[in-house]
Length: 107
Image (cartoon, rainbow, N blue to C red; front, side):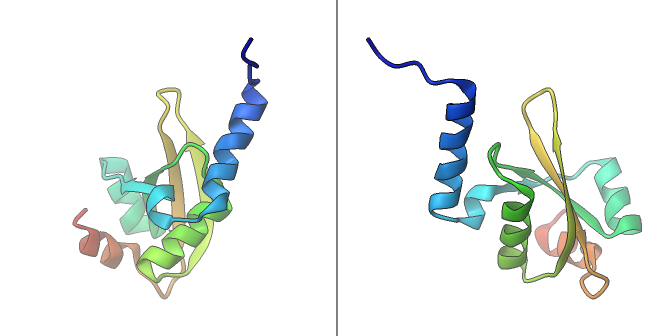
């Protein structure tokens, strides 16, 4: 009979898969562009990304810094009930979120 894996074991296996070979393109799925997110770009210097379900704050910070060559101050993670995991990334004052969002084609 096949061994059943518990939810905790399954989550650990997902996390290990992300940690084994760190690929920022796996961690960061896509930038999100809604009215609220555009407001945060302009006022709070924050960007919002859809991220891998097993990604942690440290993974997101490292991925954003490697992909976009910016300095990240803070990362907040939001798990929605629809299954989308969002990362709110606050950039340093030297790096403007509006400049990066223009490069990404959000604005």
